[in-house]
Image (cartoon, rainbow, N blue to C red; front, side, top):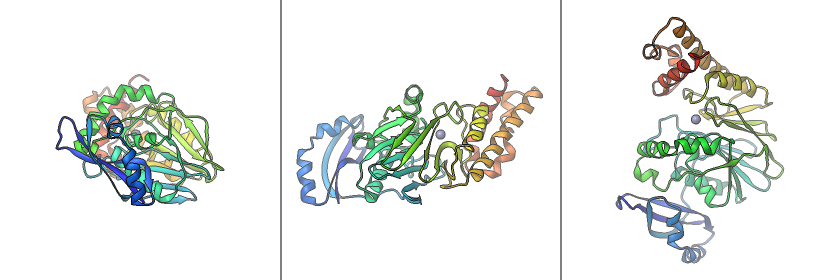
Length: 345
Ligand SMILES: [Zn+2]
């Protein structure tokens, strides 16, 4: 198989470049690829790459894709690194799902940059030539959504929680600059956000029905889960963290109540947003409850004692430090959110 790649360079820093995949134009032979390439206009590619120009295009053998692991028949998962985003992982720090039906494929989350989305696309093409009909985004956080443009470019429908577009627009600028700085200009080059349509209740991939549920504010304001009816596999997005400490960007009490409801969806296995990649329902939910309940208890006690927030956030949740990775990166922020929320109870 051959693919078309374009060397794209930043207008503001022409020495900063990245080889970008032009998806959807793969061919079996080099000759066919060259023929397709002759019909692709550079300005069409440029138009899709923010703040960059195309220096060169060429055909080459298809590059290697992300690792995918089949965790149930037709369900493949890529395990994101349990790391903060940086130039070496390119934002590949969240789990990604690929669900193959009889007539089309759905992708659940897309990684944190265009580069990760391209390698995901390559991995899916190795797996199956069926059309990728849907991208389902589990919430607005950049490590889950910034690879989506690759699939939008090839005609996939991008769907998410009804509050997704508004919440994403509010944060788009800080996500793009903040996340871009962590990954670095060249690794982040070509990344562009994609807005979503409201997810329908179900999606049919041909003999395979996916059920989408949009949740009230919990991990974030835009959490959505995907249940594959055929295998009773639940993609929980960041409603479930494993190994990676949970990050609270919504409501602590809301999240605890949603966890109870997740237990009633009839799932046999859960794919968390980070870690796993497959957990029993109990193994997924028990550590989550323990962490969030500890935050709540500690915050309520600090409030009762009249502690100031600055002092309280240094110990709220502290007894959970040894149970999670990246604890120091997130716990203080979680404690602050918990304290502020429970202050108004
Ligand atoms: Zn998240």
